[in-house]
Length: 566
Ligand code: ARG
Image (cartoon, rainbow, N blue to C red; front, side, top):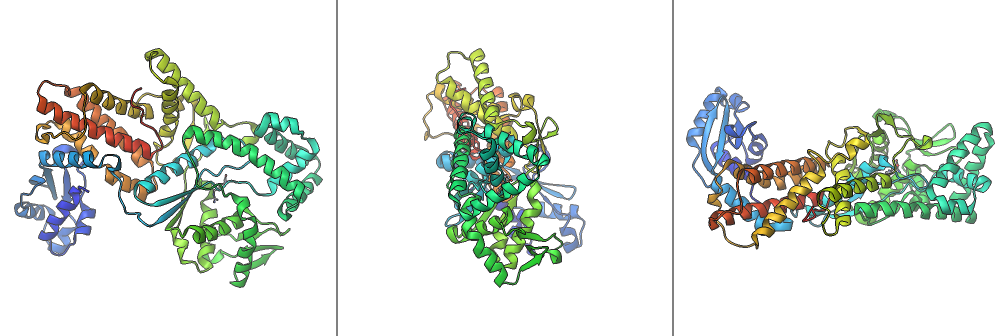
């Protein structure tokens, strides 16, 4: 991989005996504006070591820097040593690399032989699949792709919320007021209504709560009637979830949800007991986490039933055995930060060193036009409705601008769904999102459609030119500012992929794609591509093809497609 920072760090390391390449690498910065050079080395920290003012150090270093393939000149400016690259060499090597590696440009083998488990999406069955689940679903999916791109073996798991007392309540409600026809007709909506009704009636008649608990106890014991109803409700939910996953282009390697661990929790309880970690507290069993500044962690309720938390511990132990993961990554909202800190601590207390390989990747909450999402009050937007609406709007725009377009339904789907994903992966994940229809369906500015459209533009230029990859070209002809800035943007892609992976942050790619699209469009508007001069034309087409490759690879990483025509 072409790594200009490393080239420069190596040159500096030879001049600075007290420092190694890694240290220097970490200090090199990108200057705030291109006039200040392509990379800057701040000399302030060195001033203590050398007992000289930073400006003197920068000046002395500047005199010693040898001229090399990538360095045209250096300039000491108030304590910084600014490097200016030899543009033709950089552009030539960047393009050569992108155009030979193509679909794999930006990828690497850092993950070879290692497995990363990604636990994401994980909606609760018998509840509507709404925009509150969007972030986990698309952040998790993008992380899966980023890790795969870096050579990891990835296992995507949908840890469905398919177990717990709420299903006892739902069964009780169904047996009292439900009917097979209504559930078959209205599916999740009817299940939700039954669940809401249960809570309303239980306020008047608290004995209902016991009835619900009773049914859950029967479910945990494997009672046939309870299990059959539960399985039926689960199938109904899965059908709806899978419809949405299909629209989003997402597939999971496993749907082992909470119920998968029901028979595995008892070993956990036993293990905790034998390791002296289990304590009794008011009839329940807990792990005391006070020494670590956290509230007690509930393992078994008073009535002996297990919890979400217990199943998370069982799941981690199971996954370590089944996949021998290098990392197990959980894409779950920030509201569960404490829950994750607690159970990861418990794993550590159990003596498992791999507790450090469990990573919680939290994200902000989604509210609806400023108000909290509330399933029971109907204050939600279904994911399926949002996606359908986005596709519909895209189709309307296509009908207006390009009615003769081939397969417009498919393109509308790719662009509409892409717009929703892109806008939700644009901010850093921890930021709260206030969902508004207007914003979700705004396709102007720094959006998915803009980037996809730019990609389609690269395709149409190449097609018009009858371009075939692999022709030789003279990169030295690409000597304008716009061409250089576009090439530098392309050059940064591998670094951005690593950054996104290291920070578990797809937004790094999303924002980067906007940068590339903008750099491409500036180039496109300033410089004609299909010029008479054949040599110049060949060089510019190579640059266009390289931009196309990076846009397409990057869009794939955040879960979008790159249609050739829009
Ligand atoms: N079903 C849970 C919820 O909706 C998320 C589960 C996340 N995964 C996990 N292993 N805890 O809050």
